[in-house]
Image (cartoon, rainbow, N blue to C red):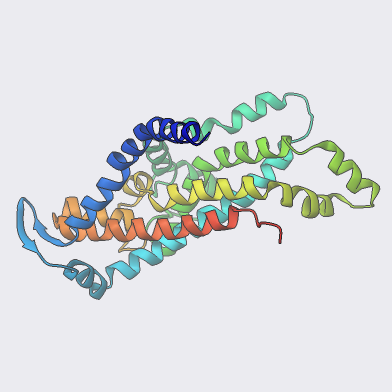
Amino acid sequence: MKTKDLSERQLGAVMMAPTFILILCTAVLPILYVLFLSTQDIRGLMNRGFVGFQNYVTIFESGHLQAALGATLYFALGTIVFQMVIGMIVALSLNVDFAGKNFVRSLILIPWAIPTSLVGIMWSRFLSSTDGYFNATLRLLGLVQGEMNWFLDRFLAITMVVLVDSWKFTPITVMIFLAGLQAIPRSMYEAALVDGANRWKQFLYVTLPVMKPVVLVALIMRTIFVFHAFDLIFILTKGGPGDSTRVLSYYAYQESFIFLRHGRGAAVAFILFLFTALITVGYVRMLREKKPA
């Protein structure tokens, strides 16, 4: 029996080996290489050697890291809250029988199906201060006069980026929530209705508890992607005005490929990795079900 168990373990190890090797080559080694680069003073094609944690000290003392972290948190919090709340509302609205529901569900996915770069170009056109369609509509309604530059004010700029990102990615959140809602047995709602629960109480005490794993999975997915957002910001604002939309991912890009300070760029990228990993681990701990005492 022990020989059989041992052979099964060996078989399991052999079958898992390709996955471990793949993870090692595509995740662990690149992270370790970024950590190594962050300890080097690399400028352009010249490596001036090992500097320890000096790159981290420099970007921290400059104040740019704190500003980028603040922009990242505002962007992440705004998009995640918007997408979770609106995604749940839309999913609940679509989780009923009505004529043409499949057609409406297909329409919901259109923004998500459009390439992100095209979304950025499209919305930069919509929000153009001179001949943008959004400003033209507001002028037609008498809500604004003259030209309104949505990317000139610091608060408006990052708010517009939040709204554009939410327009693009809320549909996938809706689909995740809708799949979870359709898996809830109708008998649970019927039992709650017999107990006198109205729709709000049914949502609070039936839907939310059952949907908790689904919500947390969607939360993990969106958090990972939001913290690494780059293309929309690059197209819409290029980190401006000032540093109001310069999130950590864009800050790492600037240091590495604009200023050619690859060591500092690697340091920012590694900080972003640590920050994302910390939040993801927190989500996973929340997702883990409590064991009965």
